[in-house]
Image (cartoon, rainbow, N blue to C red):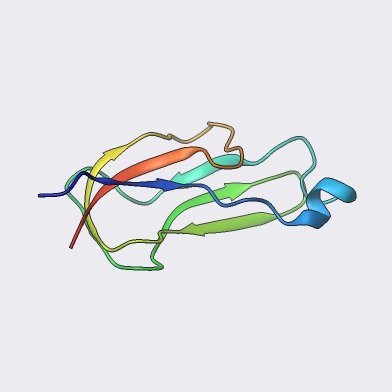
Length: 89
Protein backbone atom coordinates (compact mmCIF):
# COMPACT_ATOMS: atom_id res chain seq x y z
CA UNK A 1 0.00 0.00 0.00
CA UNK A 2 1.35 3.43 -0.91
CA UNK A 3 1.45 6.46 1.37
CA UNK A 4 -1.58 8.77 1.38
CA UNK A 5 -1.54 11.66 -1.08
CA UNK A 6 -1.51 15.19 0.33
CA UNK A 7 -4.31 17.34 -1.07
CA UNK A 8 -3.29 21.00 -0.85
CA UNK A 9 -4.97 24.28 -1.62
CA UNK A 10 -4.25 25.66 -5.09
CA UNK A 11 -2.11 28.66 -5.91
CA UNK A 12 -4.24 31.78 -6.09
CA UNK A 13 -4.67 33.52 -9.43
CA UNK A 14 -1.90 35.95 -10.34
CA UNK A 15 -4.42 38.79 -10.42
CA UNK A 16 -5.05 38.31 -6.66
CA UNK A 17 -1.42 39.23 -6.03
CA UNK A 18 -1.20 42.13 -8.46
CA UNK A 19 -4.59 43.73 -7.78
CA UNK A 20 -5.64 42.26 -4.46
CA UNK A 21 -9.25 43.28 -5.07
CA UNK A 22 -10.70 39.74 -4.85
CA UNK A 23 -8.43 38.43 -2.14
CA UNK A 24 -9.18 41.15 0.37
CA UNK A 25 -7.96 40.17 3.83
CA UNK A 26 -7.57 36.45 3.10
CA UNK A 27 -9.48 33.31 2.17
CA UNK A 28 -11.32 31.63 5.05
CA UNK A 29 -12.84 28.14 5.14
CA UNK A 30 -16.64 28.39 5.25
CA UNK A 31 -17.44 24.69 4.68
CA UNK A 32 -15.52 21.43 4.96
CA UNK A 33 -17.36 18.89 2.82
CA UNK A 34 -15.32 15.78 3.70
CA UNK A 35 -14.52 13.72 6.79
CA UNK A 36 -12.13 10.86 7.50
CA UNK A 37 -13.43 7.65 5.93
CA UNK A 38 -15.32 9.40 3.11
CA UNK A 39 -14.87 8.10 -0.43
CA UNK A 40 -14.24 11.00 -2.80
CA UNK A 41 -13.98 11.26 -6.56
CA UNK A 42 -11.54 13.27 -8.68
CA UNK A 43 -12.47 16.97 -8.92
CA UNK A 44 -15.06 16.74 -6.12
CA UNK A 45 -15.44 19.96 -4.11
CA UNK A 46 -13.99 19.29 -0.67
CA UNK A 47 -13.75 22.79 0.84
CA UNK A 48 -15.47 26.13 0.27
CA UNK A 49 -13.69 29.38 1.03
CA UNK A 50 -14.70 33.01 1.08
CA UNK A 51 -12.86 36.30 0.99
CA UNK A 52 -14.36 39.72 1.50
CA UNK A 53 -15.06 39.76 -2.27
CA UNK A 54 -15.38 36.21 -3.65
CA UNK A 55 -16.43 32.67 -2.75
CA UNK A 56 -14.36 29.74 -4.08
CA UNK A 57 -14.85 25.97 -4.26
CA UNK A 58 -11.69 23.91 -3.82
CA UNK A 59 -11.81 20.53 -5.60
CA UNK A 60 -9.63 17.51 -4.91
CA UNK A 61 -6.96 16.40 -7.34
CA UNK A 62 -7.26 12.72 -6.44
CA UNK A 63 -9.93 10.05 -5.94
CA UNK A 64 -9.91 7.73 -2.94
CA UNK A 65 -10.66 7.46 0.77
CA UNK A 66 -10.07 10.42 3.08
CA UNK A 67 -7.55 9.46 5.75
CA UNK A 68 -7.37 12.81 7.58
CA UNK A 69 -8.66 16.38 7.29
CA UNK A 70 -6.39 19.26 8.31
CA UNK A 71 -8.65 22.32 8.02
CA UNK A 72 -11.82 23.41 9.75
CA UNK A 73 -14.42 26.13 9.36
CA UNK A 74 -12.90 29.51 10.18
CA UNK A 75 -9.32 28.60 9.25
CA UNK A 76 -7.50 30.95 6.90
CA UNK A 77 -6.53 28.96 3.80
CA UNK A 78 -3.26 30.10 2.27
CA UNK A 79 -1.66 28.86 -0.89
CA UNK A 80 -0.39 25.27 -0.68
CA UNK A 81 -2.06 24.63 2.70
CA UNK A 82 -2.53 20.95 3.55
CA UNK A 83 -6.28 20.24 3.38
CA UNK A 84 -6.43 16.44 3.62
CA UNK A 85 -4.60 13.19 3.12
CA UNK A 86 -6.25 10.71 0.76
CA UNK A 87 -5.53 7.05 0.11
CA UNK A 88 -5.80 6.56 -3.65
CA UNK A 89 -8.64 4.43 -4.99
